Image (cartoon, rainbow, N blue to C red):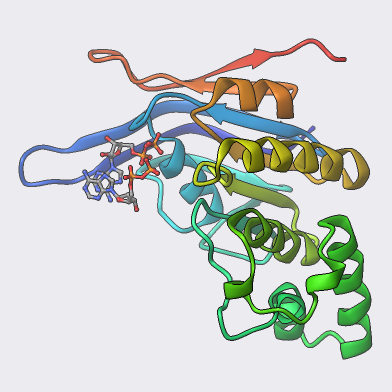
Amino acid sequence: NSTIYVKDLQKVYPSPKGDVTAMKDVNVNVLENEFVCIVGPSGCGKSTLLRMIAGLDEATEGQIVIHDRDIMGPGADRGMVFQSYTLFPWMTVAENIKFGLKIKNMPPQEQDIIADKYLKIIKLEKFRDSYPKELSGGMKQRVAIARALANSPEVLLMDEPFSALDPQTRADMQLLMRQIWQEEKPTVIFVTHDIEEAVFLSSKIYVLTSRPGTVKKAVPVLLPGE
Ligand code: ADP
Ligand code: ADP
């Protein structure tokens, strides 16, 4: 009963010097409310896989299904958090969080209720009316997570979201992310090259391999529950 179902996915980047196979035969299943990590060395295709699930890149072969729908292009059903900060600099923290709700024409009072809920979850109530430039890197990523979750996406896609942060902030963010998952139970696909981060955050890990001469594929590793 998978929420997200990736079948026999292949991605080839055409190039004059010879095509680059970014991945082949990749199969991934994500259950509802599951926190799944995708790990593997640099260049193994993690970003490419996540971008295809996000609808930002097109698969060469294979299928991606979310809640029984074949995905076609990007959609509000998938929230995305990238490594670098993607907040709108001219909007306050609250305005950033409400952005997707405003697009959906949600009544302003309802937008405020949702923004306040997520401001509390990311512990930035006091920064409601601050601008991104007034925030630290970790705080900006917390706002990016809140903005993604505020839209109630079917899946939250995170591409190395903490990689640019210093070790202490990174550890704090991992703890916060685990709390958010325990409280809100979003379905998450989290890409990282840090195996410890993956083990800390998730109960199912896919390893994308990229050994020369082998096909690149995702291998699920199930971790014992706590
Ligand atoms: P990772 O996120 O695991 O570091 P990527 O998904 O970024 O890996 O890249 C996987 C492979 O595909 C790499 O060999 C990379 O060079 C190649 N690749 C990624 N994007 C492109 C592109 N737009 N054009 C050509 N090759 C690409
Ligand atoms: P990451 O390792 O964080 O995924 P990369 O440096 O692999 O980042 O890729 C950054 C961007 O460059 C991505 O949008 C990717 O698609 C693109 N890219 C990566 N490798 C190539 C390549 N060989 N040719 C063209 N674009 C590439």
